[in-house]
Image 1 (cartoon, helix red, strand yellow):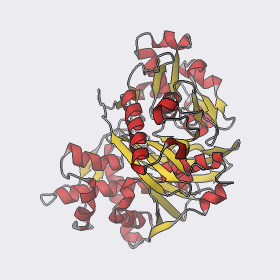
Image 2 (spheres, rainbow, N blue to C red; image 1 turned 180 degrees about the vertical axis):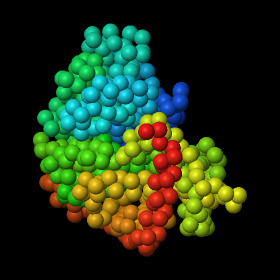
Image 3 (spheres, rainbow, N blue to C red; image 1 turned 90 degrees about the vertical axis):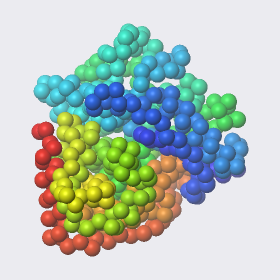
Image 4 (tube, helix red, strand yellow; image 1 turned 60 degrees about the vertical axis):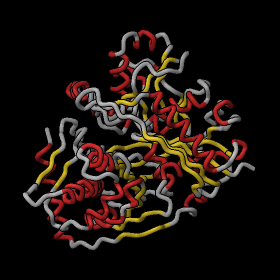
Length: 493
């Protein structure tokens, strides 16, 4: 019997592949960073071939490190940065332009035009999303209108659109499969989350031909076979989910009211609302949590654009640190009431503000401010932004009693204690913080019959460490007020 699962975790700054055993234990990892492109202010792009090649090399590296053969692999799961938009030629399989990344703000003016025309409410009712450049629809339209010959080729059925999962699936299967799953589809702003289908009215509004779009399947499904030339044999691809939904699955948040927050490039706070798609009155997103065996479960989500990317900026932009691992020691040396606030609105502000024109700023600098205060403010900005999301969920009547966390930043104990203090909530870190890749692996195991239900996944979740709040409510509120004041100064609306 094949005893391993290959999980692809294609992220914003790196591609990663992890080999798991069928009990969800990580055996080997391959990872490769790739170049970010910033051609204009507020624009963020990736070379689609970089995404593919770095993913392929990471897979090969992980398999080699695990010292297994392709016959040992039960199936492949894919999880991915969401909303990032790729158009490619169906014949050559090559992208017609760089991928437009989820962080990209180039379609802000177009989205504002649609808002002024009164389209936001109907879009929200159908998709659960706010009218924002973050999502794929306006990016697709921009590519069709800006790349010479793109619209004519699209109208002739010669082009394919996909979020990163679809592009990787196309590449893995040698162009035989053009599919996505319900979670990724729900982030395009073209998918009706209530009827679970592409919406013809939205396609007409954005002037996007339906022939571009992939087939939408459950998260655990038969997505085709990998090309035998890639790994030595055809391997079934059995699971796909967008990264935040995959993390929700990996954290075993299968009951309504359970919540997780993932700290990667951005931060994504997701609360399972069960089979009910709750409409947020506080500018959170209503989205598909997962769809299994044709049954859709929903979530409320708050998206923060810059979390780990703020630490990356301190490292690569300001050269204040040489490695993210240095931040914990620096934060421990910093006076807890240092008074410095970093608002990392480098690509605008996400939930609950949705202000694409906001820009980053530092406040509270004094002659004594040094590297450790700036680094600490960067770490704290992630906690304060999470507090913004918690407050929005509370206003929607949904306060999670505890929060399961994952992602690279959660290795930092200081950050998690600070998060517990600022939220006034219990923070649980699981023994496996690679829950995004783990969620994709669990989908493979479900589809392959290794697990009979999500109950089997729930029993595998293990606590590594719990962080309880230690800060008084008065002090927590005082410091959060300082954050809110800082945010108000950078907002454009």
